Length: 164
Image 1: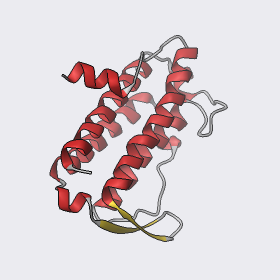
Image 2: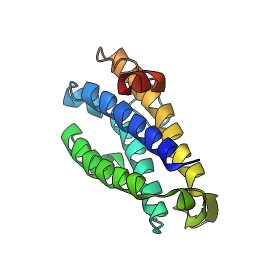
Image 3: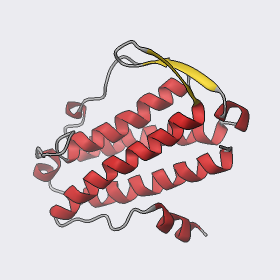
C-alpha cells in the first residue's frame, strides 16, 4: 500500500460521510433520536459508532490507546454530532496527509478498550476503518431511505468518476 492509495480511500470516506451527514441534516430531532433494529440502534447510535471508530483508530495510530468509547448520549442533537464529526475529520485527514510510505507499511502496537495488546501494519488498520465505515454507512443509508431522505449512491466508483 502507498500513500496515494490510502489518501484516495480517505477522500472517498470523507465524500461518502458527507453524503450521509447531508441527508441526515434534513431529519427531525425525533427521527435522529429514534431507536432502530440495526446492531447499533438507530441513526444516532450508528452514526456515533462510525465516528467512534474513526476517532479511536486515529488516536491509536498517533500512539494513544483510549479506554473509553464514544456513546450516543454524548450527542443529544444532530448538530452536536456534526460538530464533533467535523473536528475529527480535520484531525483524521491531517494524519492521512502526513503519513509516509515507510510508516504506512510498518507495524504499530495499541491496546483495545478492554486492555488487550495488538499489533497491526498501519495500512491494514487504515483500510479497515474505511471498510468499517462503508458497512455502517450502508445501514445509515437504508435508515435514511426508509425515512424518505436517501443520501443517493455512495459507491466508491461514483466518487472516483466525479473526482476525475
